[in-house]
Length: 189
Image (cartoon, rainbow, N blue to C red; front, side, top):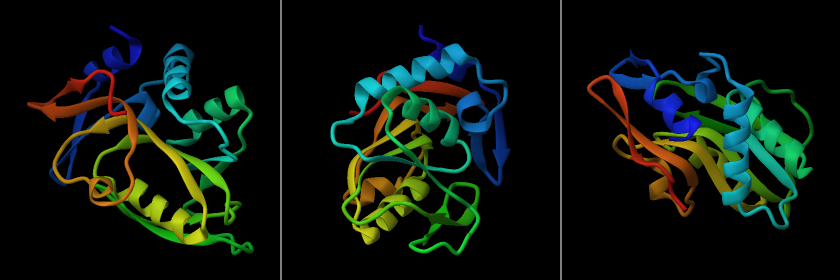
């Protein structure tokens, strides 16, 4: 069993407003993220993602940053972080993010019309974040080459499924009886 599978099976579960949330180093930063787990994930992303002709990696703050930074370092593709703070810079594009447990306004800088982008995120659950990001990138005129999320939590409706976009994932899980259950150890292609 690989490290990602093992670490997910060992994840504690917390409940936030009837949302069963697994606590994992990739999605929460606790317990600590071991370099070997991050390396395994980055290698899997590089093997799975369509990287040809990608100009920029785009990721939401905060938990996509460590994954995307590592992928950027390995591929020499520049990284754009979608921030939760408005800076008022020229070309800044707002988006509204809704997840299973929060709502936020976020802002994209440094993505221009015609840019070929790879969207990376830690977890795909309700699809609210990725759907909002893809819509904003489309409004900017960027070309979404590929979308990859490390973990897909299968739990009801997913906004991304109802959009023209689809995400590749490395592993698909659900939470049953207070434990993570692996549904597909190779994720979605």
